[in-house]
Length: 386
Image 1 (spheres, rainbow, N blue to C red):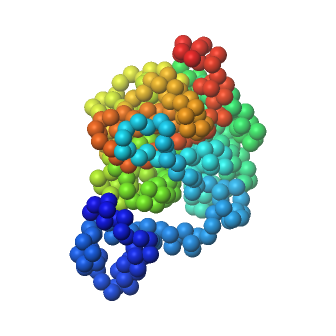
Image 2 (cartoon, helix red, strand yellow; image 1 turned 90 degrees about the horizontal axis):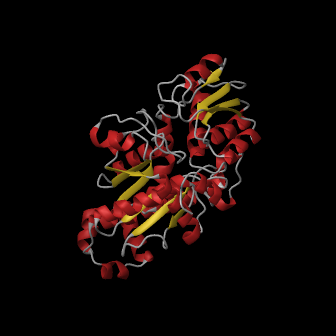
Image 3 (cartoon, rainbow, N blue to C red; image 1 turned 180 degrees about the horizontal axis):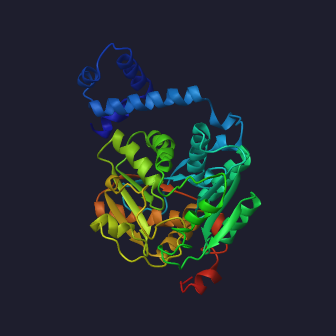
């Protein structure tokens, strides 16, 4: 179907035709044939029509009164990137997850996992929620702990930004700092310290965001459907950073169920093992990196490699530069993982070699990194050019 044909179809005519189909007056195939349209185009119109009906039933979010701040999680905006993409004809959209109450995409995971655990009796009032986190999931768990009458104790790497640590303390979360340079097999490393913390903490609930696929389910149930509706079911490529793997796994599963041709691209930092494991299923020796929220030193269960079609690996400095470019050119003040997502979008478009409609996720806000990636002195202290 040509662009010229689409332009003759006003919204009113589209609505009238779709209503005929929905009332059973004619089939999709008959309607398409009668009007020289493709069935795929009619399916797209039908999905958009039904999505509008769902939004009407849900009510106007802007005027909705939430019973608690946790009910404000999700339904974040999708923003067209018009100044940082130079591929003619490409359309790139970013879901700005720092619009969630605690400032990151991890609010979705924390809310889902805590509510599920409370429903099935794994978590009871007065219990302690314990988790290892780069800070964002910890903040979401801190929110849920305050609302649900729980306590919260988290292990974070000692390279975690001061802004995140101070925010956790403000929410009453007990913070355990873990040495970043310990090998993953060390009992006090980020990967292993939870074994001791769980053992030593009576009446605790350990969500285990790295290996519990309720993490992925949170995004399958919310982030994926939101992206599909906001993109009107027209997506060529989905790009996301890979940290715990929950976002890319849950969203990819939902999108591929809707359209198996969608190309899913992951990105992690140099020093993480994910990229090489994706390519060869071999484990490489992990190395140090500064980018927070992405990558890991060993395989974890929430990373569903079979749902990922391609993988890129980024240097810390590239991620930080792209994050600052977002602030400078798009006025989107986001963290380093968002910079990594932008860089990966560019790599994916270059590799594809043609214009495409791309969706990505910007996980958190630059406010979390004022003392690090938005601090020239800090960058210079790490050997990066400013």
